[in-house]
Amino acid sequence: MWVETYARRPPMETKGWAHVVEVGYHSPEGSIVLHDGLAGALLPDLAAHGKGHYRIRVHMSRIPWEGEERGAQRLLIMSYPGRGDRVVDHRSRTSGGPQPGT
Image 1: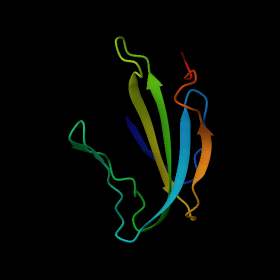
Image 2: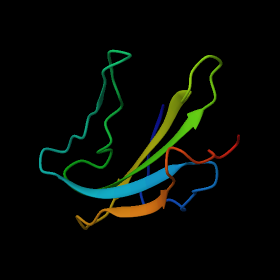
Image 3: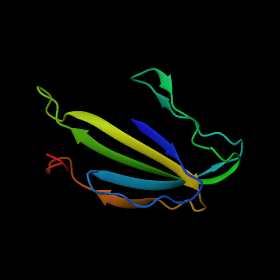
């Protein structure tokens, strides 16, 4: 799992990802912290620029794993200052179809 913060909107990259979804979030306290329940770790603060409006872009794909039907999951979570509450589905593939890179 990767977490990246940006000062402005990063370029859109969908190649190699099964799902890419973006949402808006307002951080009145200046903190956006996610918890990885499986690893038991807090991820870096996504509100790198303090209080305000952010866009959170999540990339998800699966990595083939021997003996596993669906494989391991890989994630890239990006955050950058931006307004809007709209959910934008930049890329969505069904779980039954072929995954990128396989």
